[in-house]
Length: 408
Image (tube, rainbow, N blue to C red):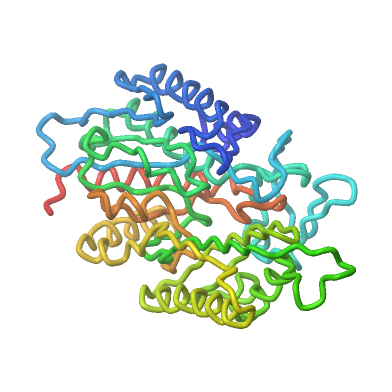
């Protein structure tokens, strides 16, 4: 089975994660999808494929040669999808021999190269798209599809020499909890790769440093007829707070190594308002400065209103895995070699986000990130290149071969 065919099979499963649910996995659909993956792994010969009580799927491909002396390498993807765009019901189709130009996804819904110029790179190829009413779920079902297609090839082609290969599929990555209950020791790999990026050729070892900030504002209600100099409208103070953060330092105005403040949600009444932010920067010192700026804005408004009406809670989410992976540079070099061997060009750039690898690298499992052959994640305009997914599979096989007798 080809990788895109697996993707089409996985697309209909409604595996969106829900942050408000504290269970693991956060939705039962993820657990059901995990059981389907276990059955698929068992059917292809991964004898120890299993899903634990928290929804983590693990399995082992034995070494092709028991005398192989290289390290144990893992490949990891996540089962959940984002709720940033509508995510069900998903309807996927294949556009064969894309000729360029606009793609009509549904009546009135068009994906155009004028807005998404990456499409121009895929003329003559085949694309997997949604109907434009939902995202496609490539992030990260495409990662799962390429890993299991690699696994099938390793298990059926005795000419491929490889060491022990570990496979892991996690729940709840999209809500920042994918690594929370990941048992690194039980997984049993020395190193791993997450397959959770974009275009084929992406090799990523830098992520944001990330924190969350919850801003709670307590107002004072008064009858509006007698409210002068007495009422404190928490909702209006929330708007004032948001206006004091730099407008140019939001996700929609930043790129590359530029960090940001991102207002995720807000709710408010006269007596109470809450702002939920994510705060990001590749430089940890700059992230700390952003956190301090948020605290300073709160202090300024508390002084202005003569009371401690604002409290701020800041929590660490993950840190830049660059500081770990630079000590294991062979992971980057070999991934780049694999891309080039299979007809690609390497694209090394900072991840403007995080992956499970961000956390896992600090948990003792160095773990850079690779592309999946897809574009426009978290969007109704998400698409996958059939041929790029094939090349991702080829490159994963190449990495497995490289580590068969690799000496650290």
